[in-house]
Amino acid sequence: MTGKITFTMIKPSAFQAGYTGNILAKIEEGGYKIKAMKKISLTKEQAGHFYEMHIGKPFYEDLTTFMSSGPIIAAILEHDNAVESFRKFIGATDPAKAEEGTIRKLYGKNLSENAVHGSDSDESAERESGFFFSLIERT
Ligand code: CMP
Image (cartoon, rainbow, N blue to C red):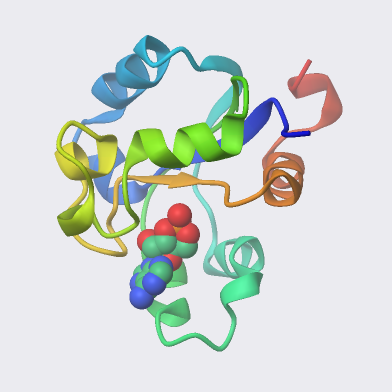
């Protein structure tokens, strides 16, 4: 049984470049319903906590520095088979390998500055949603 929610972030570079409106429009046109959403700035420590499963990987330091470099948009999205479908929808992690027309192809620059985050499992979607939103904010 697959879950109905996934979690996404519009990353600092895409927010800074003014792509938020286009990215959100594309997400809604794709049939994803916004269940919760906020603009927020992460500290380096908070970004480190969010990405704690990547501690020890070569990109962890740069990733957490980047994710705390400016405001982001955090959102919970609802859709059937949300996690898998959204990962396909946004394109491959590396924008250079993402399919034409996907958000990462259109708005991503490189592996770190890949425009948006998408949860990689139902468990991650729950954990990540709970990281940013209280119960009352997600109903
Ligand atoms: P995201 O979906 O936010 O989840 C983890 C992030 O790590 C990923 O997107 C990339 O932006 C970033 N990252 C940087 N380098 C790598 C790499 N070599 N492999 C996977 N993810 C990477």
